[in-house]
Amino acid sequence: MAANGSPLGDYLRARRAVVTPEDAGVRSHTRRRVPGLRRDEVARAAGISQEYYLRLEQGRDRTPSDQVLRALGRALMLDEAAISYMLLLAAAEPVDLMAQEAAVSMDNLAAILNAWPNTPAYIIDSRHTVVLSNAMARAVVPHALEPGVNIPEAVFTLPQVRALPTWDRLASRTVRRLRYYGHPFDPRLHALAARLSEQDPVFRTIWERQDVDPYYDGDVRPEVNGYGQIVLRHQTLVVPGTPGFLLCVFHAEPGSPSADAIAQLAARISSPHGSPRPPRRPRRRPPRRPSAEGK
Image 1: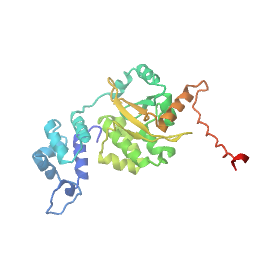
Image 2: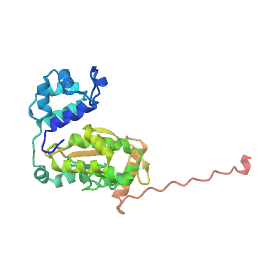
Image 3: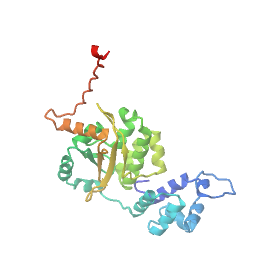
Image 4: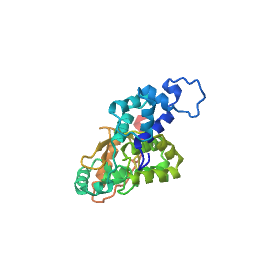
C-alpha cells in the first residue's frame, strides 16, 4: 500500500498472490511462475474482462462499482471484513489527518474515560497510538497503554510484551487491525510500517499480505501484577466526529475471578494511597491437631 499510489491496486495484487489455484479450484495446464492466481484467473472468476482488471491493479481505473468489488472479493476468497476494507480503499482520498486530529476535543474524551473509574478504557488514533487512557487501563496493561505509546511498536519492541505466551496471536492481530483502521494515504502510517518491517520479519510478512481484522470484540488475557493472568472481554467502538479514533474498553465476566481482580484493582487505585498495590496472599493456616477427646 503506497502512500501516493493506488491502495486498491496494491491490495488486489497482495491478495491475488496469497490465493493458491488449489484453494480457488483453478486447474492450470501450463507452468506457473507465481504461487498465487493470475490476473486472467481473477478476472474470469469475478466476471470482468482481463483488461479491466489490469486497469484496476495498475490504478488506471479507481472507480469500480460495489458490485465489481464484491465480485472480486469472492474471486479472491475474502471474508466480509476484507471486502469492507476493499470498499474503503476504493473510496479513500488523501486527507490532512494532522489537522483533523488537532481539532478533536480531548477534554470531552478524557471526561468520558475518567467517568469510568472501575473500567479499563483507552482511546487510540488510526495508527494505534494511545491518545488517552484512564488509570485502570494503565494498571491492567502498564507501559503499553500510556498516552503517546504506539501499540504496534510496543508489541514488537518491548521485551516484556514479546515474552507473553500469547505473543504470536497478539502480534498477528495487532498488524491486521492496524491495516484495517489505518488510512491508506497517511504518510505517518507508512513510515511506521516501514520502520517495523525493517526491524521485524514477522511484522513485515503479515503487513505485506495485507490481512485485515477489525477485531470489534474478543478475549484478552493480560498479566496483571499481583493477580496473575486475568481474562477480559475487549470491545472496540469508533469515536464519532474524529478521524478514525477508536474507544477500547475491557470488562470481565460478572462473578468471575477476573471480575474480582478488577474490582480489587479499582479499589486500590481509588484509595488515598493512590497507585495500585498487589493484594496480599492469604496465609494458610496450619491444620488443626486433633484434641485429646477426639483420639
